[in-house]
Image (cartoon, rainbow, N blue to C red; front, side):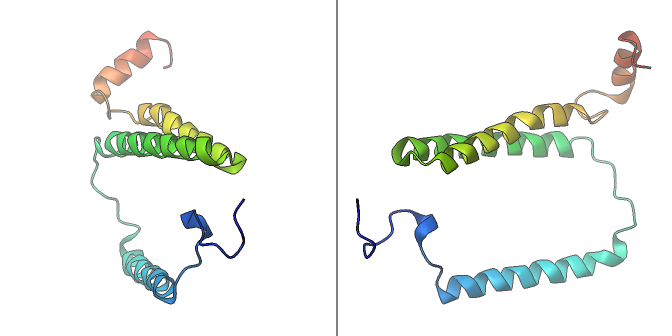
Length: 124
């Protein structure tokens, strides 16, 4: 066991510096300003992008799988049950984006093919 006066081993145990606190506050301010600037055009519909959500889901799948593996590795070292729970939560979100990507009509196949398949299996 280590003494309480030792330097923390994990990044999560470190106390943020004044510069880090200031940077976080500045980032929040920038996000709020950008959000405020976008409020007037929020009711305008955007252009249709069929490939956006499958691409986003693929990115989420890969990054969440990597995060889950890193957290599981960290768990194998520290045996912290909270890390295990967090790792499985990331694993769940990585796997749940697969059905999420399949919910967008026309994203993985043209809309007419999706409609024909729905008719064939009796969904319409």
